[in-house]
Picture 1 (cartoon, rainbow, N blue to C red):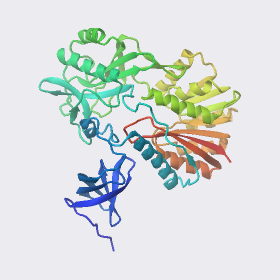
Picture 2: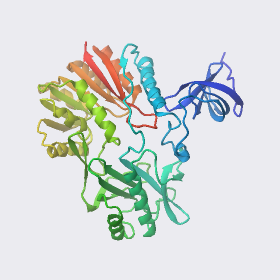
Picture 3: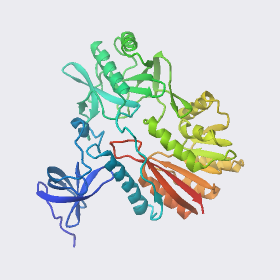
Picture 4: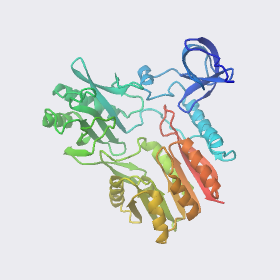
Length: 456
């Protein structure tokens, strides 16, 4: 007989919260039935309104807070909660780091069945605000003027905002200035419903170490009104700009960037440093958005790799070579593989830029390229993986198990897929020694990890 659900939609009930979900909602239980409430924290008591009832769980909304958590802080900017950019800003930074550490521990135990792995306290930031070096914001129209901001969650309504708590001020300032110039000079915002208008998004990228700025205007059309005047005004009003780029995306799609890129003024790339390594960043390059914490993450990766100078290292999912080039400073030879052709071209350019000659890069799927290398006699002493959120391809994990590198260093942006993949490696003869979480995205629920894995 199916268990009856103990609450109904529109009920007002008093609850006590005992946990947080992976996306930062408070969890309360009524007769074992979980109710998720955004904005609530463990240890708090509240009156809530039940707004949705499913078979396995309910959704509620905070009506009245009766007892506060000692981790609760006042929200710095009310509208940033609405667009979902800063889901954890009602939690003190100490509380955020504790939540993320607990999240990593829980998934390692629940998904990976790894009870005895040492999980270190999360490496956080000294100043956990205004850290993102890149933003791409949608553009709309209101009262005949261009507006920009963020989409309201689960909608395409733009919430207008002129600054973000997590973007660098140079990035926010550039976007606002480009929007004002385009508005003054008669550019129309793209309309999703009619598929008319010009300007879809404005993007800005900033090299924190170099002070170089790139602005990208993403339009539906291959041309737009007063283009040359707009470029001249951007150069005049934004002194740090080094690159002005036009990206054309003519498709009816939610994907932000199109394939066609034209440099309108200045350089095709801007430069930045992570540690001593210099990177060229184009409009389409993948580059970590928090350079301060990227250095922390890569230093830990290098430490776990434990290189003495005579090792061969393979970097699967190498991207534009960020980790590969860090490792190449200490290794005898580094081989990087990545499926995106443009990323590999960037990686080769970045190696040249730094006079690094002991790193080779190949285009292809890691699970196909690495076995070919193995057949050619290229055997890794250390294998580094930094996969996308979906984790490693199972064929790659089987390749690792067959190749038996002495050490694997796994850099992960998703603790759940990390835990799943660690279980597969453990069953294949490896032992997970320790996991170091790093807070790359303060005020949000995301956490990165570096795991050290050795052959038993």
